Length: 119
Image (tube, rainbow, N blue to C red; front, side, top):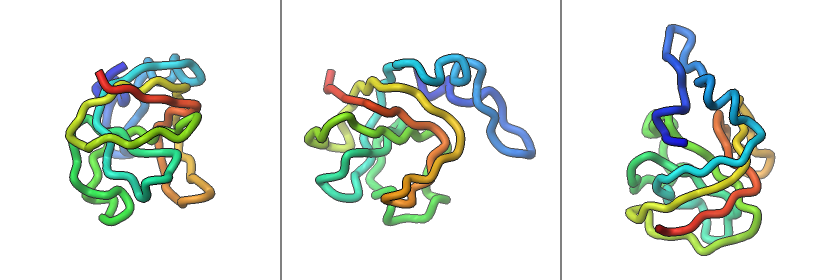
């Protein structure tokens, strides 16, 4: 899967998820991207972006964030990597608005039970 495949179209009501996202929901997918700087080192989730970002997702307004981000919830803690290094992430795809009860972070796309590796 690629970041270009997240949304089918954009209209006056906002983004519409692509048919591919809908079809792959609940299935294991792999995607490459860049890890945005995490809130804290011991977090068990992070934000995956298409391009490297220097901003902490919790330190700026949502206006600074691109629309094509993916929240990654790890199965187990892993050591985070520099935001300039591309990683490959694998996990179960979910879509639709969801608010993380611990952080309050709202996501539209997520990978659950995920892990990542560096190519």
